[in-house]
Structures are given as structure tokens and as C-alpha cells.
Length: 342
Length: 270
Image 1 (tube, one colour):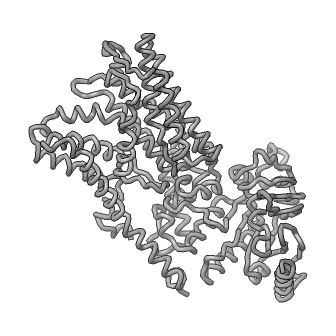
Image 2 (spheres, one colour):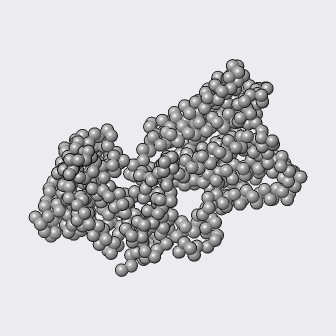
Image 3 (cartoon, one colour):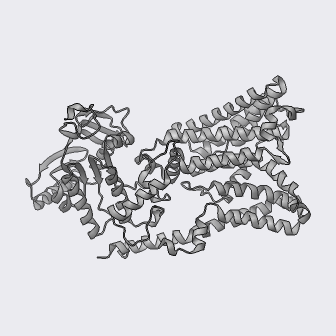
């Protein structure tokens, strides 16, 4: 049977292929409409500098959504860890200490989210909404509402290592793509990832097959915290600036990137390749709209259209299978399935 | 000869009387007493049929044995050795070679069959990565030989939601068979099955006995349990009310007794 499967069916099973095709079609479209911008390499270098924080956040969130959970607090982690880093560089000239403390702060916030969700039992959408306020508010208190301008950090080794340039290529894109590849392995080839998939699929089944659901959930939230902190490091260093609302704009964009990529909101299934394509689509549509001469006001409306089209597309692609299951279930009710015949 | 080997309490080579034994076990959920003072044991090569009405506590009892639930009070013994309740879990039960086929759904709907067969006991390489090729290969062998999904388009990559009820049950049973348990717990394994498939399950239970292993078999259909069980244990409202050896009671008498128990409830609640 498998050998006779059509080429299209086999192609559709390759992770993230449809949405990657959409990304390429969009690039081609923009090349046609605004060739002077989209046929030069500069715009792509700009994407590669600006996508990484979004991508790191979206990749982390993909794992949490695979486990049937959500984190709304990461914008505040981006603010808090950014402040920790900026404070250490600005006031103490200690970038490496700042880096470690920033990641530690993210881990701590993520761990506390995990405790609230897995041990205390608060639904993650509520728990992380609350901690989003808490840590965002505390960051404003710590920073006294000020922004920090980080001049002259281009000379620092840490700057060069994380957001420097190799020729025209921004180094942060290597970090982000490398991390995403590592997270792909974690999700698809490690026990931890498989446990997250089963938790997202059905938490009772996960318990029956021996998954320590509380521990794995806590680990997933902690990982998300560290990744959000790292995204913040990339963002703060690239901008050479910290301001206390710097994570706020990411909340909806990151979720959009994950869902455009084809990850199911119901958990148990996730596509990190799709998340990569989704992240680039989000950033590219923004740049593309402006470059094609449409007013910037159109950006969000177009993102909305692309978002809806992508989600409907994913539904249609899953459709035949789901339809088949329904037919089988119905046939089963009337004893018509193959195996039931004498 | 066994003297020349170090003692391995986990393996079935050592001498023991009971593969599992529960002593004065209580289980309460909030105010509901699901089990009270239950004594229950399974011999090392015995098939025990567990019967009783809905809500009698059958599923709770086997969830304690399989490590999903921790009893509120009482002691659990595995191979005559007392089990530490704080460290007993599904994983520990697997290590002690106790496998359970649950009545409720025990497969991840959206996951491929190979993940479902090995989750919790993944085959991993030296660096901790799951050996996907190996898991798929074994899964395909199981599908073809143990379960007998011949000629159908079901492979290791199929997802559970594409399977019928009987096929799902087959996967869950194959999972228990593959890991070569000394005790196999079957919680109403034939509920979703067609007649021809029920025969396969009964043959499997017989195979457990001839293989020198033990089985707890929960079943609503009295004719099926009466046929294969060495001993029948009747649970009623969280208590063990009777234990019957094979041949002591005919199927007709057993049916009459069970109906009487059931009507006793109706009288009590009226």
C-alpha cells in the first residue's frame, strides 16, 4: 500500500513542507512586486538580524504548545532578562555576569511558572497571564521606568559572539537556527520531547504509560524561560538598548508564528520546521508590505489574512484523514469495519 | 545452579508464592471509599478473574497494582517482597514485569504506533537519542506477527486515530506481550471487540498460563471469565465478597449469584 501512495501524499508528510512552500511563494511574489528591494541581499540580511529573537521565542513556545500548555509571560521575561543584562553592562561593565544572571532569571521565572501550573494546578493561560503582569511590573520598578542605552558594546567579545557579523551575515541567525535544530531533536528524538507530545495528546494516557507529567511540565516551562531570556539577550545586544516594554510586541507575533507553522492548538503535535517558516513569514510580510509601497498601516491586516489562510490550509491538509476516521467510527457503530467481518 | 548467580529479585527465577499480594488495602477519593480492607493475591502461575458490578472497585484495584494510583492505606507485595509505596510507580511496575492493558484509552491518539508501543520504555542510543529505526522495525514486526494486521494499510507510522476500537485494543495487548511480563493485567480487553477477535484474546490468556505467567482478567462477560480463570474473585462496593476456585461453581450458578448481588444493591438503595 505504502509503495502505491501518491507522490503528493508523500510530499505532504514531510514536516513543514507546505508552509515552507508558502514562504517561498511569498518571497517570489515580493520579488515581482518590489524587485529593487527583494532582489538585493541586504533585505535578507536584515531579516536574519531581526528574526532570531522571534524565532527563539516561537521555537520554545512550540514545545509548550505541543504539551498542551501556553506561556503568556515570556514578554515579561524578555523585559526582565534584558534589564538584568543591561544593568550589568551599563552599571558594572560585567557583560558575562549579566549574561549568566539574565539566563538564570529566565530559568527562575520559567520554573515558577512550571510550579504554578504543574504542582499548584493553575491552568497555564491564567498562571502565566498573572506572572506576565508580575515580572513586567517588577522590571519597571527595577529599571525605574528608564531605558538604558548601551553605547560602545560593539567592542565586547560577547557582543561579537552573539550578534556580530561574519561578512554581512548576522551571527544571531546561526544561534537561532542552531537552537531550533537542537529543539527539533529534543522534541522528536529525546524521551523528554516524546513525553511532552503524550502529555499534550492526553495527560491521562501519559500518566498510564508512566510519564511523570508534573516533572516534565515543570521542565518545559523552565526551558521556555531560559529561551525567552536568550531571545532577550540577542534583542538587547542587537538594539544596543534596553527599554522596559521591549518584550510586549512579541506576544501575538510569536503565537502567530507558531500557529502559521502548523502546530496544533490542541497539543500532541508540533512542527518546528513550520515555526521557522512562520517566523520568517511574519517578519517578511511586515518588511514586504512597506517595500511594495503599501502604507505601513496595512501590515497587520495582511498578517491576519496570511494567518487565516495558513490555518485553513493546515485544516484542509489534515481533513482527509480526519474525515476517514469519522467514517470508520460510524461504520464501526454498525459493524461494517473490515476486521469485524466473519 | 541458581546459587552461582547473584540474587536478582526482579527476575522470575527466584522462588515466591505470589506474584502480587495486597493486604488490607484502602483507597479513598475525597469522601468516596473506593476500596476498603481489600486482601487480594495472585499466584505465580494463576489466572484470576476479577468480577463485580460497575463501580465495585475493579479498575481502582488494578490501577494500584499497575502503579497508577497509590493506596490510602495497606501494603502491597510483589513476589513476596514488600513494595515501598513512595517509590512505586508505573515505571517501577514495568521494571517488576507487571504489564497492564487498561480499559480506558491508553494510547496517544495523534501519535504514531511506534511511539505508542515504546513510550516510557524507549530504545535509546549512547547519547540518549531515541533509536527511531529500531523502534519502527520492532513495531512493524509486532504488527505483522503478534497482532496479525495482514494486508491492511497499518504500519508503524500509522496514527492511533486511524484505527478501529479492536485494532487499538490489539496494539495495547501487543505492547503488554512484547515486554514479556510475569503478570499481565487485562481490564475488560474484549469490550470493543468483534466475536472473532474475542477468541484471539482468550487464546492469548490461555497462552499466558501455559507460558508459566500470571494474569488478572477483568471482564463483564461471565462466560469468558468462567472459561479461562483458575479462580474468580468477586468485588462488591469496594470489598472482596467471595473467592471461588475453578469448578466450584457452574456458569449458571455464578450468573444467578451475580444477579442476586446486583438486586441486593437495588433493594439497598430503594
